[in-house]
Image (tube, rainbow, N blue to C red; front, side):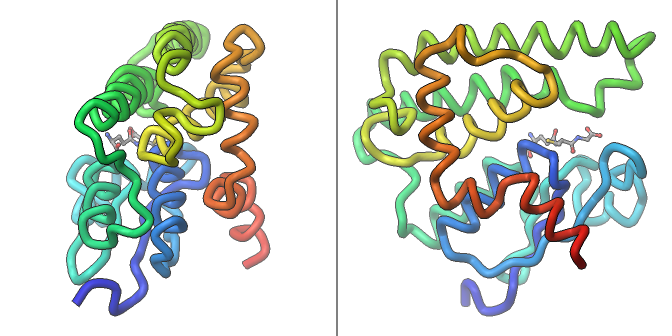
Length: 217
Ligand SMILES: N[C@@H](CCC(=O)N[C@@H](CS)C(=O)NCC(=O)O)C(=O)O
């Protein structure tokens, strides 16, 4: 039976992929505990113990319903399929495609190119930062053009909260805080970010909130 015991999210407070899943769990009202996998200082994702949980050696992974699922979008789709309310997918084929366009730009076109796991493959910190900032900025330019057409100012696609919003907010948070990019050049992204950040699912699962809870344990 789905949802019988508390799910376990293996995540990291600052990880955008973990935040996507945290917000989805919150929306779907799935009780869960988060196990911190320090991917920055301790590099715990590379231990044998974690590899047994997630062969990709990345966060997140979700243990739920007697099994473990990896890859944030596969996890979110599983939650959508097993716990359909509230729906995170539009109903029309075109809006579904628009939602997936936005998700892909972020999930395939930005996040992997600014992932912290790339750092050791660069000669120095400056080269790494230049590379990650460049791809993040290019992604923002693309998203601004796309969302200008599909967004209602409140949500990315149509007038419904979808998986695209789950992907957008954590990536913009990274752009602003880690890459120090200003969003004022992107009016659509700015409006969406400001409005979406107030959604309960992002307030309650915000990285700073996770950090605060971790420190108070
Ligand atoms: N496609 C994967 C990407 C996972 C990923 O890159 N996670 C990052 C954090 S957002 C990570 O664990 N990085 C550590 C590393 O690559 O060593 C997903 O969506 O779950």
